[in-house]
Length: 328
Figure 1 (spheres, rainbow, N blue to C red):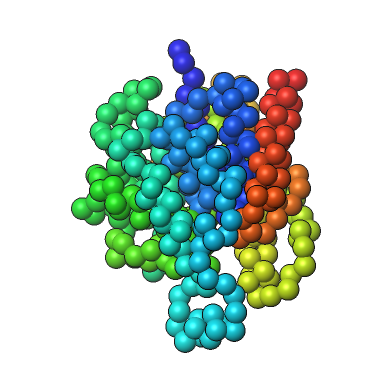
Figure 2 (figure 1 turned 90 degrees about the vertical axis):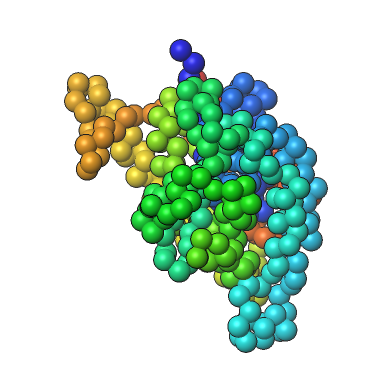
C-alpha cells in the first residue's frame, strides 16, 4: 500500500527561497512525491506551485526575484503621511498579484492544496482548498474547490461551503500573502482577508484531516531566537522584525503542540490505548520531518539574487541534514 505524504510550508515572505531549497532536495534527491500540500503566506505560493507540478518553475522564478518583481512603493515621509490619512498599506502588491494570475490555475491542480487566510473583520482563520475539479485523488481522497471552515463558523452553511470559483480561490491565495499593513487586505466573502500566518504560521492541522502517513514540515523560522541580520534603521524594519519575532513564537507554539500530541498518541498506541479529541475522534501518531533554518534568513521583504541564493542553499543543506539524521 502506498504512503500518503503531506507537506506543510510556513509563512516567511522573501525567505521563500528556503522552502524551495528544502523541497528541491526532498523531491530531487530523496524521491519525495507529495499527496496533499498546505501553506500560508509565502508557503501558500509554494503549495500551489507544487500542487500543479510546477515546483521547479517556482525555484527558477524566485532565484531572480527583486523587490520590484514582488511589490511597488517605498517607505518615505509621503508614505507615512498617506497612512496617517487613511491609506491601508505601505506597499502595493500588483506585481505579486500578476505573478499569481500568470502561474496559478486551480483547475490544473493534481493534488489537494490548502491555503490559509485570516479575516480582519471577524478574526476568523479559514482554509481554502482547490484541486482539479471534483474527483478522486491518487489515494481515493475526494477533493474539489471548497472552503474548509475550520475556526470559521461564519462560513459554515454559506453558499460557498461546497464550492468556490477559481477567481475566489486566487483571491484567497493573494490574501494569504498579504502581510498586514505591508500590503492591503483582500476583500471577498464580506471580509477583509490577510496573511494566514497571523493566526497559523505553520498549518499542520490543515493536512491531518487527510490522514497522511508522513508529514514534511518546512518552516522559514527557527524555534530558537536569532539576532537580526542587520541594523534596524526605520519603522518598517522595526515593524517587520517585531512581526518576525511574533511569528516565530506562533510557530514555536504550533510545532510544540503538534509534537507533544504526536508523542502522547504514540505512547498511547504502544500501550494499546487510544488518545481522543474532545469529539471522540482518535489521535493518530504521524511520522514527520521538521526542516527549519539554523541561520537568520535576512529581512522578510528583501528580495535579491544574493539573499535568494543564500536562502535556497541553506534550505537544501538543512533538508539534507534532517534526512540524514532521520535514517540514523
